[in-house]
Amino acid sequence: MRRLRLPSWLRLPSWLRLPSWARLPSWLRLPRTRRGQRRAVQVTVLLCVLALVPATWLRLTTDARVRTAADVPSAPVAVVFGAGLWQGKPSPYLAHRLDTAAELYERGKVRVVLVTGDNSRHDYDEPDAMRAYLVRHGVPDRRIVSDYAGFDTWDSCARARRVFGVDRAILVSQGFHIRRALALCEAAGIDAYGVGVGEPHDATWVYGGLRELAAASKAALDATFRPDPRFLGPRERGVAEALAAP
Image (tube, rainbow, N blue to C red; front, top):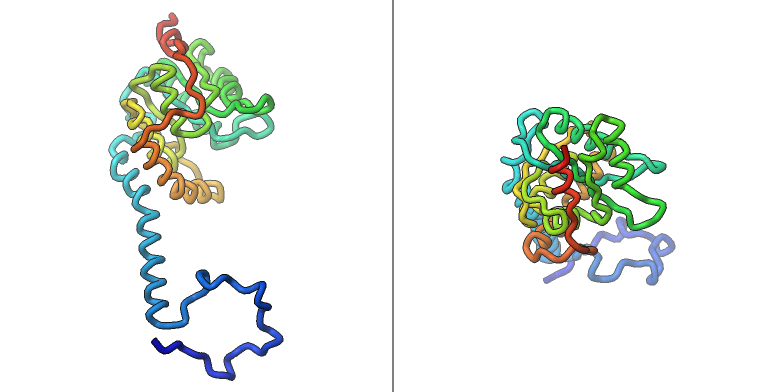
């Protein structure tokens, strides 16, 4: 195949060309032939389609279980996923999740709230910060259970089922994350509905949505192979005792 060549008047002068050590490797350069360029476009389109398949799977399999705090069916437990701390206190996104969990408790939709987050360092404790926030907003301390090893969504779902014995729950998270949480908790053996917390479409929301595209692929693998969480640990009776508390 004959290569396409630029006319001499369009070529860069030698003093403007990159030295050989600064040039892209050959496999990253745009092909010079029409056939090569066409093939590059086809490969790019295929990769984009493959990247969207897991996200499409999440939407198709979980849309019917995403509800609002007003119309979600009741369940014994609400599961609230960590979303970061700011100076030891819940970030705005996490605070909005906790506000929704407090609303579910106030409406009588749930009897216990399981807060699950990261406590891998002494100076970073999501579950205790979440518990303190809920108590300040009207949820009794005896109705809150903490999971200190919810390092990611799959770990939180797997531990909710295998460590805390949760088999039916309402999941609380932002709209861009709730479908992944639903798919993973269902794969872990939890009959779940989700409440998607609304947020303004700001930079954080856009970042979260883009991050979910990548996280959907890991979710598909976790749902298929169901690995052990990073830290499983023994069974705990915290949820059962909180449900039995007067």
